[in-house]
Image 1: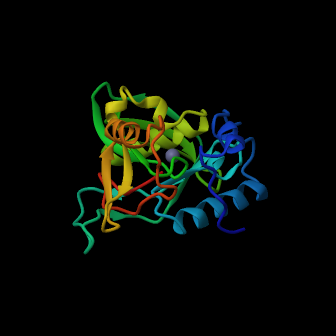
Image 2: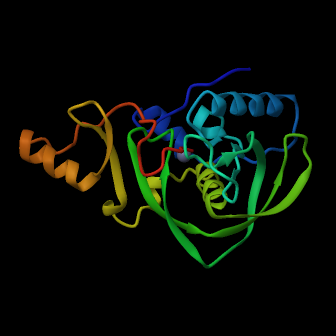
Length: 218
Ligand code: ZN
């Protein structure tokens, strides 16, 4: 039981796992509790607001997330207050609002990139907690966004699939002083093609911890 390696799309074998639909949990047994502990440990060890089991190579319908209290005062770093991570097992969206919101999302499995994605503003979710207790709860705004992002992971869907256009994709690049900037992907491709003739931009291999559109990743 410990922090686990996060699979990324840069590795073909990992990508195949990330693209696979996860199986429902039949019983919240010892093995699932160990998985829950690993998800908690991995969230705490990373700049993560959420983490789904397939991201650590386990194809079970389980994810963890830290709820953000958007109404609360921000801390010294200007971040909204986050609760300790919670777990959702076999989550199902019962209702989602037609009202949508566009917002930035990062993903620990997609290093160096962030996208502006449209998500339902509100969702009603039924799930089991790590003790096998069933809950039905409504979430809004950023929390609803994280839940929809994590649920996508359980269905093998990545945020890149949710992009309406490449104009909504951004990459982290380092400027001359070594500061990380968020630059539109299309601009980077254009620059790379012009200066080196390569068709692919040279992307930074590590996810940047802010400054960014939104440093929180899931
Ligand atoms: Zn993700």
